[in-house]
Length: 426
Image (tube, rainbow, N blue to C red; front, top):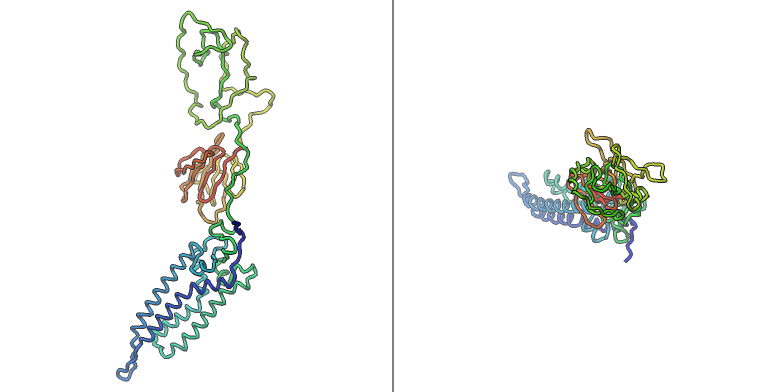
């Protein structure tokens, strides 16, 4: 079934119906309990004075006020977190803040205070009648105040009919910076991404990951085999276990001494995130059968730079890019801070600051630290409130341990709060 993704303002009639449903239980409880309390007042004469016994009014009036306040606080909390009230649910409308998310307790309280100002004034007048014992004038005072309070509440609720922005706001909404939407005729913004709509988590069309030359010196590079003279291993290389396919097998008269163990290269301790690169066969064509290659020169350096034939410049370096779930694309610097409003720590080197919009405030101010490293990035969760996770290309999702760097390869997705970015390589 097709879903209407448009936002539809709530009509004034639906607003009024929802308000009547929400306010009716509280008002009914107050009217009934105060009526019972007033009916129980007794009047006696003692020493020329009239004495009123108001114990029943205090009892029933207190019960009514307690029940009404409890009901109002429950409705306020429900609407603050979800935009729902009993009336909103029955009429198919939702209240939201100006970004389309749950309005919050402060906004809901202000809306209710403005709408029910007249009724609250009548309740205050009833309290004054009890304190000053104006019981004979109670009906002339409270009757008109209740009528005026009800009329004011109705006027405020239907004031959205005169709103110039298509009926989005009434007078109470303008003061509280709230909106009211019809979720039966359109989309519920609170559950579908706010005013701007749901985020798209469809696969991103970044270029496929390409193998590139490692920019790190001493990476694991497949060395071209060297063929020394029989019985004499090359310096730093053990004697071959199998004969070369193009050289005749020769059995030495005496077993040569075992070569000394080779000291590990400093680059061997580097993590193996860089992609291996095998040089083309044109770098070192195989010698003819029976040909002996001269031993390497003592000045030869196994880590010296080799230039590719036909190219006059350095080897290309991978360019890492991320694409957010809202479609924005960024090229990464060496160090990047990601968050709602990222700020580097004291003494931290200058980093690229990537601010991500998050109306739902699921992202911490400084949520992630990214450090590019060859063919991937190191991702560190900066002790965020809602945490982070990584989904690898094979679909495995792993939560990030706060403060512990995790290496992420291109093709993976990083989730932080309610947002996600995809790591690609151009």
